[in-house]
Length: 333
Image 1: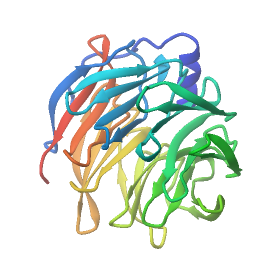
Image 2 (image 1 turned 90 degrees about the vertical axis):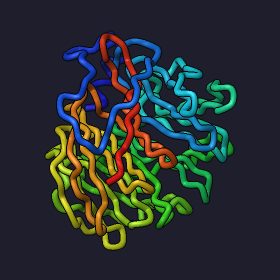
Image 3 (image 1 turned 180 degrees about the horizontal axis):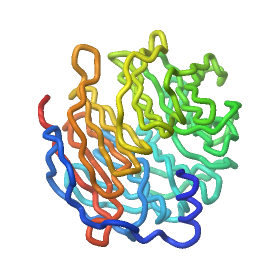
Image 4 (image 1 turned 90 degrees about the horizontal axis):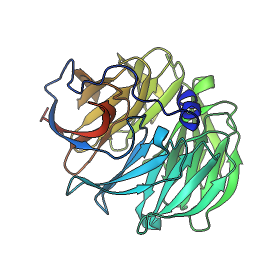
């Protein structure tokens, strides 16, 4: 699905088809709208986000504009735009390296951006369709999924060189790092698996067929609780997986075509954003997820949460003809 959007971005910009009304059509008391901040560029698709708590910034992939938007979380304003990134999908801030990594399907590369100057300092590839990005701090390596099935690319942070390509046997969606195990986890969509990679050896150490998985794509980790959350595009379900056993312990219905997940460890809340515009909110209670409700906004398929303030960020591609960053406050459970 994301591949189709990227192809469109390389041709004619998609100028916000469908509704442009910005108000939620159904709300949950777990979230209250605080502010809509205008974003630069045309009213076209946005994608992944990454919060840098060191610099107090949010990096937003403006996919069909080919840009990464840099947002100051403290002053709530845009402070920069990195251009020349056609079809940009994944974005990951890595403060220890002073870098931002952006997946650029239009050039089949990963752009390495200097966090201080916001200039692209390297372009690493070739990668068929680069998407999710994770960073393994112990070995200072960056892991990039390939949604075209070309295997997981491993980039050495200090040198900006591809040091390995790890065969996965299928198309990969999201890639995340689990600090509890020190492993990289990859959702292999076409195999309905989550694959574990050891960053020290760059080898697959385990493959997990999850019960009820159907085209798994988005993931998030509760490191302290040893839980993995997996969203399935094929059947609109959310799986809760025990990371100690890799057994599915719970299943919930969510919005159609779920995309990006964000977990707030301090607030104990999980947010699941879907292509249908549904954002599903859950709270952890006694080790299980309890649904708080849903809200629906146009094109609300990407979400991030600041673990310090518990504020929730939803970039919306078209509200009254322009893109905005919707900032929402999470109420106490």
